[in-house]
Image (cartoon, rainbow, N blue to C red; front, side, top):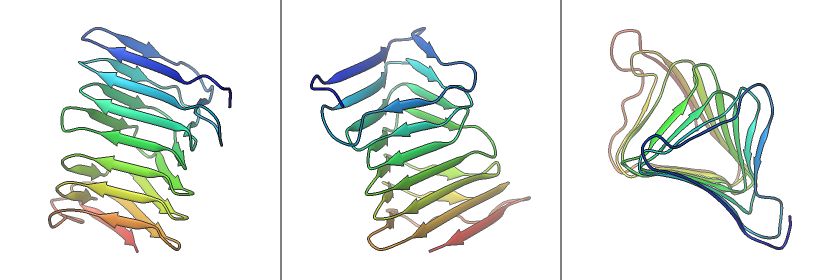
Length: 171
């Protein structure tokens, strides 16, 4: 990591940042200056099919904007947060892994379906301020594993609900 903090802000309706192809996208580093991506006011970031990694000094804030992640995501000690006005779209059959103290926070509810898998491990945390649906109307998988790893929801979740629902949950 360098010594200067870096911020990428995609703000306002019609504002877009598109990463095509299979290139990886790395946010932050193991140590050093902070790196932040902020999606606000209708701004949209669309990743390619390569890995998107948020390292310990990285923060990905979806606050009124949209993240369209077309590849797998690793929150490796960093932070991903989505407000109630933000939209987090993880492509079907892709994985989100939070590890090494990584933080994933959804204000409001979130649904894991469409063949997606969320793995929370190695002291990482997944938090929703209301409920977390898993496999409601389609297949979804959640794994919470390892010392210090947590899942926190404020209300009762729906797991495997609705026609075609199939939830696999390991805690």
